[in-house]
Amino acid sequence: FPYTTLFRSGQIWREERVKRILLRVSGVAQRNCILANTCNPNVKVEVWPRYKSDLKVMEDNRVSFYVGFTMKGPVAFDIK
Image (cartoon, rainbow, N blue to C red):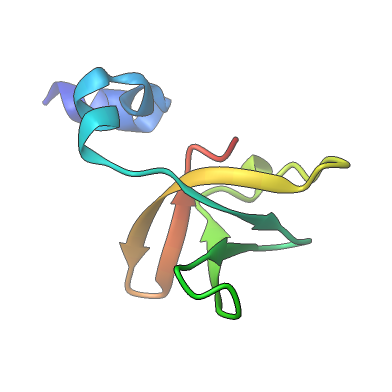
């Protein structure tokens, strides 16, 4: 199945069909997680990166990502 290969390589997030269907979420990168913005400015949701190496905290720690869900909770994909 070609989408499995695209998902594993990370290329799936560059597909136009995926970009049209999914919405990028914004948030703030912390040490080990991301605090995702919600429609209520006083409420943030903790989201874990799919791979810890994806969480590169720079001076400007604002990030955007796609949210996925696992049995352990929400997961961030394609962190930028």
